Structures are given as C-alpha cells and as structure tokens.
Picture 1: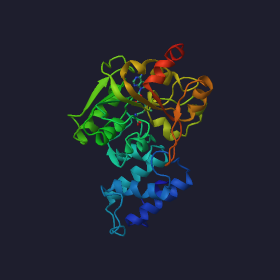
Picture 2: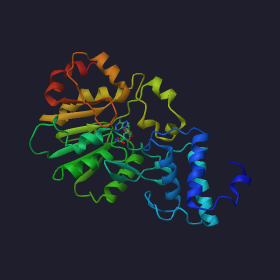
Picture 3: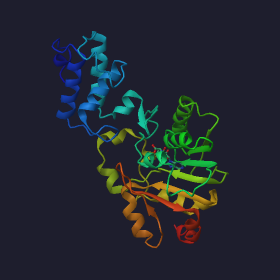
Picture 4: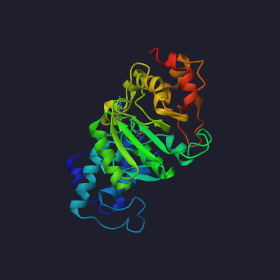
Length: 305
Ligand SMILES: C[S@@+](CC[C@H](N)C(=O)[O-])C[C@H]1O[C@@H](n2cnc3c(N)ncnc32)[C@H](O)[C@@H]1O
C-alpha cells in the first residue's frame, strides 16, 4: 500500500478495514496454514483483534474508527501481508482443542491433529483403565500436554522441551489454564532429564523433511527452526524417540507420535513394525500409535540408528 492509500480518508468503518485487509491478503496471495482456511475469516479476526474486540463481534462493524485505531489496523495488515507473519503471532493467540493458548515466535503455532485424539481420550488405542501419568515430549507452547490434562483430569502431566524459550511460553500457558498443580515442565533433550514412567507419551516432534522444508511458504520462516526440520528424511528425532520410549512407558503404555508427510519414510524404513496409522476424521495425516510391547519387541531395530 502507498502512503497516500494508507492516509486515505475514504475508509471509515470496521467493515471497510476488514474489506481492505481481505483484498490485500488476496492480492498478495498470503498463505493460510496456521488456523484459518478462509481469508475472509482471517481478515475479520485480524482487524477485530487490532481493536481489542472478540473475533465474533457482529453488531458494531459499521462503527467509525479513530485515526489511532486505523493506524493499529494498518500495522497489523502490514505484518500479515508484507512481512508474512502468521495471524496467531500477530494477535498472540492460537486455539487448540477449543482452548486458547498464548503464542509468540518462540513456539510453533499449535495445529496438530493430535487434538482430535485427545478429545477422544486416545480411544480405542489406549488400554482401558486409569491414566496416572502423561508425557508431552517436544511440547512447544504446551498445547498437547495442557489439553491432555483437561481430559485426563486426575493424571499428572509432564511437558518437556529442549528449548528454554519454548518452555517460558509453556509456563505462561500453564498459568493461563491454572494447571500448576497438574502440569510440570521438564527442560530436556528428548528423554535425557525424564525420570518417570508414563501410561501415555505423546509427541509432535520436528519432522519436516529436507524437500518439504525448502518449499515451505514464507509464513513458516517465522516459526522456530528447531521446531520444524529433523534431518533429510524428517525422522532424526522420531527415531530417537522410538529407540528410547520403551524405557519411559508402563508395561501397558502407549506412544503416539506425529510425523506428517514423513510417514512415507517411516513406512519404507520399518516395513515390519506394526505402527497403527490413525485415521484422522477431521483432517491431518501421519500420526501413529505403537504399544510399549511392540516398542520392546522392535527395540534392537530402533536402536540401530
Ligand atoms: C513441531 S514443534 C511441536 C510443538 C507442540 N508440541 C505443538 O504441537 O504445537 C517441536 C518442538 O520440539 C522441540 N524440540 C526439538 N528438538 C528437541 C529435542 N531434542 N528434545 C526436546 N524437544 C525438542 C522444539 O523446541 C519444538 O518446541
């Protein structure tokens, strides 16, 4: 946008600025992959957030704006369209399993399809019976562990990450959800500082393979590099988890890991392993479950990396 356009008096209402934002997003072909699938919805949320209004505000869209409010909206549009920042980083909020999480560029923006499994308490993959301990490995914002603490409300949940920065955000989210009694933070390179055994270990580790990484739209460049890539085939971290998880699972425990498109590499490299590839009804791919017993049986194979 030119300075002249930015200073134009023609646009006066909230609705005008939602329209402007929508047009700018379309003209400059922003990438939608961090929450919204519809640019009109995203434009609306961005403009309303700039005005500190709820995303579903309906009744004041024709209200006239102050100059300072217009400037704040234009600054948000600039960040989204010119700088390609994903919306959740601009408004410092992302939703996961219908729960709000604070986010900034220290953490991956929550979007894992594992949310669908948490909602169903990992049924039918987790054995029936009480769930006393859960580990969310590679927790980032803490979204998976905190959501799990809601559905397993008597379980103790540990959330672990190697990144001190990410864990600072996870702490904000533990406080936001008042989960201090139930959810604990472990700063750890995978299992190195983990000492307990768990009924359930869930992980959305970095898993983007080299080919996908170089093709990712600019929006993803704002996310922490540590959260995305994991070697040529995207499986460096996943393979370490497979080799070690059995030591940290109870006998009847379950490991659930997201590997996205790197599913193909895992299936090629371990054709004999009975991974359960989970059918994700609401979209997403590349999430598997494997029992503690199967991890034990194939332990030698996994440790050959
Ligand atoms: C794909 S992000 C997932 C974040 C979060 N679980 C989610 O679903 O939004 C992966 C996370 O793994 C962390 N990570 C990378 N390498 C790690 C390691 N060796 N040990 C522990 N965490 C690691 C990164 O810091 C990042 O927060």
